[in-house]
Length: 376
Image (cartoon, rainbow, N blue to C red; front, side, top):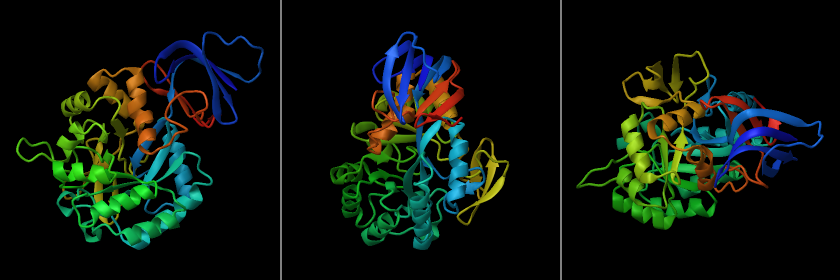
């Protein structure tokens, strides 16, 4: 299959007019110029922008479904909806909960992975977090890092746990981080009161990310530097941010992005089940939530999560920072793939999976291809 007449965003340059050849789920050639061969399987890209499919490493649900309660068919429903926003890989993100509930997610994801091409695995958000910055997590289930429990869950998931957010200042956290990394799991600091020094120490044990940076963590302070300061300083940290303009105001986002740069920043949605749904009131693992002013809030007041789509996050970052198309591709796909050690996706290049999103000049999603198959 060939998609021609494209503006192709690669890691090193933008091909203003070219084509992409696809064979058996992978990109086999990217060329500048016209495609003139007599081939029946040619699609006219109509001069749209081609970028690597978006990767959302932090999403709790959509379509009225939370991953904590989902079955395989539910995950298929969510995956289909996410294609409409250009997302070709996502992590089913959990909430702080009891072991039995996490076991259920692990079993379901292990089955769903065989049927849902865009499901990248599991992101455990908690339960090993700090109650001080619990946000919309249920405090009743917060606990110290437990290596035995974690190893059990990894095994139950058929090794599909890809990412965990935790508080590195908790008891046993450093040993836990080292163990998680040994299992191939990316470790991120989130819902944490860690100091700058805590993060520096955690990095030496394998920490590589910060979760929804600025939200639910110790901030940037001139006498007591916390996680936000560390996220800005350490060049080996990837930094998630919810780019809806609500969780972090646009001026803070553009300042943070200016410091961190396009090689470490990762757009995430942290979207809840209310996305792609008419549901206005719902439960977040026992906590009451309501849609209000473009986001989701606990009925007690605090922000609970977003309703953001990945394509809107990309447009927002373009508007806030004037980021180039190459840098927008990095922060919506390439960096997430690097953080998760997905070497087969995240860029448009020969040998990579044919996960491609076509966008118009306003960066609205036009078509989406997953493994070379048109899915939207």
